[in-house]
Amino acid sequence: MGLFAFIITLVAISSVARIVERRRHSAPLPGESVRVDTEELRRLSDTISDLSGRVERLEEERDFYRDLLEPPSSSRKLPPPNSGP
Image (tube, rainbow, N blue to C red; front, side):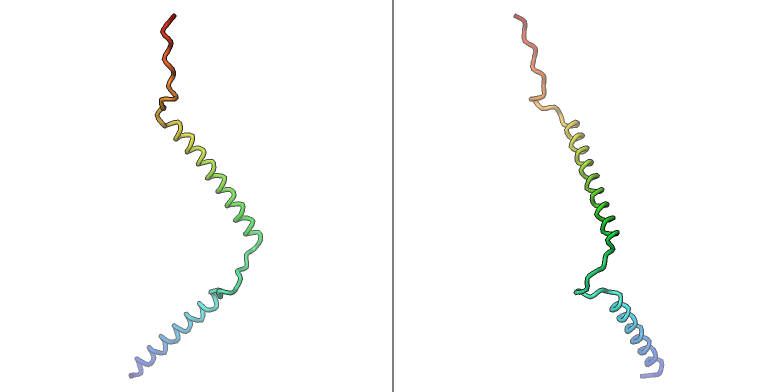
C-alpha cells in the first residue's frame, strides 16, 4: 500500500467516524422520551380541531351540492292535476 492510498484510507475512516458520531448524538434512542412543549401541544390540538371543523363544513357543502345536482326522482314529481268533476 502506497503512502497516497494510506492517506486516502485514513481520511475515509475519519469521515465515516465523524458521520457515525453525529448521528449517534442527534438521533434519540428508542427508549428515550421526546420532550414536547405544552404550548406546542396546545397549538397542535387547536390546529387539529380547526381542520376537523373545516372538513365537517366541506362535507356538508358537498352533500348539499350533491343533493342539488341530483336529477329529481319520481317521488319528487308533482302529481298530475285532477280532470274536472
